[in-house]
Image (cartoon, rainbow, N blue to C red):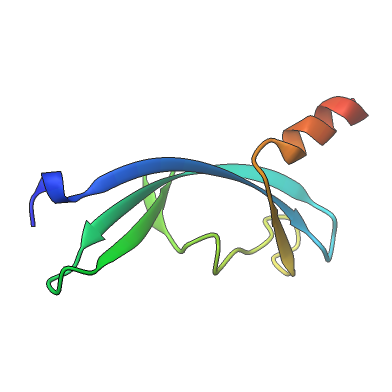
Length: 84
């Protein structure tokens, strides 16, 4: 495997906790890399640190519970601007 085999994309998500109502946004660097069998897998990085996929595992930073709803990027920031 070489550096050229890895494809890196950036994605952002908005989250809202359905337990406490806390909303936040996060940006991820996602590295798609082939394994020894040629199948591609994704590694997620946030602030330079490897993290679990936000699509399968996310904890609320407000209450550490959930459940969590994932929204389009910008939804939380848009509401914060609206609410002042």
